Amino acid sequence: MCRHRIPLPVTTVSSDGANGVADIRIRTAERADLLAIHRIEQAVFPQPWPFSALESYLGESGFLVAETDTDEARVAGYVIADTVPNHGTPLGHVKDLAVCEEHRREGVATALLRRALSKLESVGADSAKLEVRAENEEALRLYRQFGFEHRKTIPNYYSNGEDALVMVRLL
Image 1 (cartoon, rainbow, N blue to C red):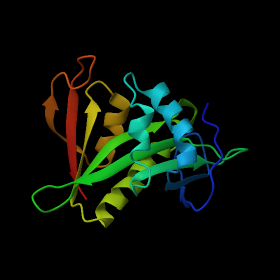
Image 2: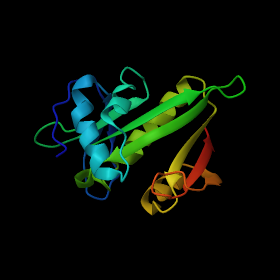
Image 3: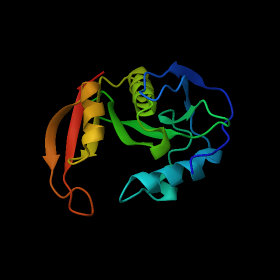
């Protein structure tokens, strides 16, 4: 399900994942990636973003994909991060982060989040926020490792009535 050809240029980072993947390459998403990204979005989230929402972020520096070393290049995951105005200083916002099931626990989400936060910092953001499902323990663990702290809870944030935790960290 995650197969998709990926052209260069890329940035390669070493993985410290438990499954021993040697390298994870991160690059800006392209139109040719959208179908693979949308498939991951649908497989991972109970209320996935529509294709058009993903498409609207094309060309943004914070729309990144990851590929791993396999027999063919694959979109293993993606992140969408941008900035919003915040009293004269941009506030980073991690809007979406997903990794396909077969590449979880390989360091893909860590590499994507690290690169996204670096992008946000490079455009002047001094902090970043995100919303996460209150019951998503795996994501919460990752975000806490990156220094995100719970700031508030938004009741019934998701269409199924689930609460969202708003988490923030300094860059």
